[in-house]
Image (cartoon, rainbow, N blue to C red; front, top):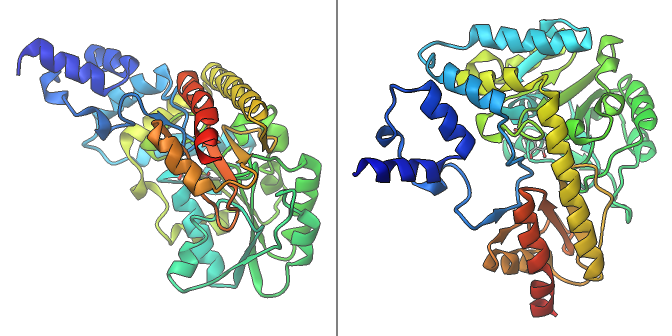
Amino acid sequence: MHKSMSRRLFLQGTTAAFSAAAMGAAASVSAKEMVRPTPLYGPPPGVAKLNANENPYGPSPAALKAMMQASQKGAYYVYDSVMRLKTMIAERHGLTPDHIALGSGSSAGLVAAAIVAAHKGSILGPDLFWDTTAKVVEVQNIGEIKRLPKLDSLAIDLDAMYAAIDDSVSMVQVTNPNNPTGMLIDPVAMRNFCIKASKKCTVLADEAYNELTDNGDANSVIPLIKQGHDVIVARTFSKIYGLAGMRVGYLIAQPEKIQEMQRYGIGWYGLNQAGLAGAIASYEDHKFMDYSRAKVKEAREMVSAAVKENGLTALPSVTNFMFVNLGDLNAETFRAEMEKENVLIRGIYRDYTNWSRVSMGYLEDVEKYTSALPKVLHRMS
Ligand SMILES: Cc1ncc(COP(=O)(O)O)c(C=O)c1O
């Protein structure tokens, strides 16, 4: 292949920032060797990918640089970088590295937590939450998920949750902010619930979207772990940090709980050098996080305005996605019609047939959603 052609393909297949870093830091790898068809690493050109709550503005420039450097040391296992990241997280919260378990995304830790819980009893959750990992226990036939009744507000009723914890429940799972609703629980109510509930069973707080909220620290229950409560918090580098494809997440819990969960596949062996480097470089990158949060807010305002203009409503989201009420329209048909407009969103969740989740992404992609919305609604009416 002609040299300029392969360079052009390379530039198409990666972000401009990555290619700049790659060219600078890895002069020994020729552009020709790195040529890949574009769709291999992300959405095809022209497609607005708004279906997985990713942050396309990531990875941050610092993360890209660190990942390039780390990839050159890909021959080595990751023990030291795991210790580095665990220590950084522990120091921030006044804990020890023994309180932290890293995993391949937070999914790895959430699966481990679900399996440990299933061996002791059932998992209790609201009717609608990010249950992908908890469902593993049902798929494997080792446990069950008990769900609270559906609420019209789609909020999580913590009083009902507390009342439903009986002897059969070993873990209660709260996604906060919740996915797919995008709603946040009042921090004082959440804290009090965790203190009370953790006397009866383990409380798992999935805080994947915490850093997207305006005051993440105030909305987190991590401080309860330092106070000794039986609370597990799951966090991830997949959301605000823009590292979903690099697969780094973590659990924070009492050290004995961490040890129990480490029996089920979390720990240093599930991680990779580049992902860890990206996470370490991003962890305290407040400039990038502020930038991402601002972009997400702008996108939410665009979607809110479009939803209103088209006579629909959406739940009050504090995250990088919104749950839109389509009235009497079917969310799966709506998803399929949106796909015809090159806009990828989510279809139906459980039996919430008229609710549709859209992620915030590049503003130009969000604009594709807002312009396709009236067209699709018109077609479906
Ligand atoms: C609430 C919640 N928790 C956890 C995850 C898992 O993400 P990851 O495994 O990339 O950390 C997701 C992914 O969308 C999520 O929405």
